Image 1 (cartoon, rainbow, N blue to C red):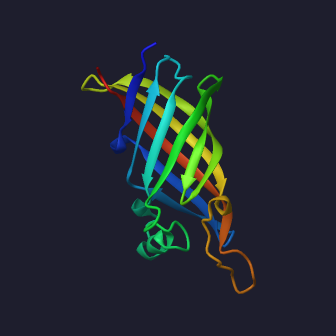
Image 2: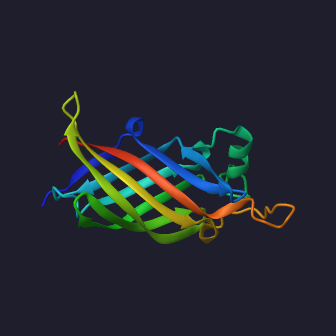
Image 3: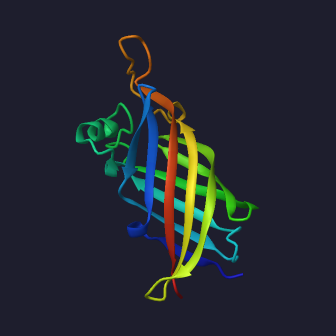
Length: 178
């Protein structure tokens, strides 16, 4: 069976995260630069494998001071670990347009297996004749599992940041024509 290669379309994709601040509200951030590929031979994508690479320096929380702190050794340590990576192990059909995407997420020097929930948006040809496929991906990680933490506590001893990070991505791929 021939495998098709799909390239991530950055102009029509988005990766964001949310984390609790002072445990009362969410702070939302985005990664503005990332790339990825998908290889699949089956029409339902159940044999698909995904690889995504995120540029840590592209973190954007709409606050330059906070972004610089996130790039520091307190959090992502971008000077030593400029990229995060996800490499899939399986893409399992659950029901309808729902899938589970399991793979290894590497942040800094830590790699952990995680499972994302995926809603397959479908396929369509764009105005230039390119075949596209869209995926809505979501999941959670514990920031402590990836050594993403500063020792910040409030005056009362509470956490400045929650431990759970919510990840969400709208990803669109373009099929590479032979």
